[in-house]
Length: 214
Image: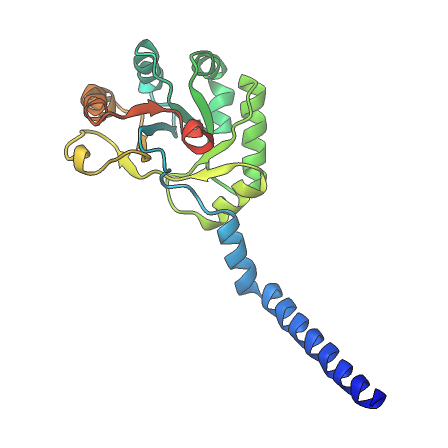
């Protein structure tokens, strides 16, 4: 009888070890690591905030309209998100501080790998005294999304990207969406119409972080 119990115990222990080995192999495979990393760094394309919409301005170059667009929103008492790079912040510290003082959110404009992001975050902190919590991407970048998550940043893509006129916008947006704008003259001229459409839909414009963390 004792011999039989020992035999059953042996097979049970063997089965447990076999299952553990299979799990280890599965979780150690390149495919599973990539899948887990992709899930960990999954970007936000929209949120569940039905009564709000986020606007983010992607400052990818020395766009002359950046300050004018910021002033436009500030005068209306509206805060939005400005996604900037570290080198831009280093070249324009006074404008960066002005954006921050006006209540606008500063996000990191995602580009490069983890080390590059760390360097750009440090430049933004040095120039403006803030550390972004959001990383805005202009294109799908699975590796970049994961790198941002490792650095404690929330990766964000937009629901709708506008580079000019607001034609067809009412049918393209709804509460919870994230609108990405470029700081161009065409966008500046279209802002009143864009804001009118959003207001008529009963939506409030907020920075991206408020959509994510409220």
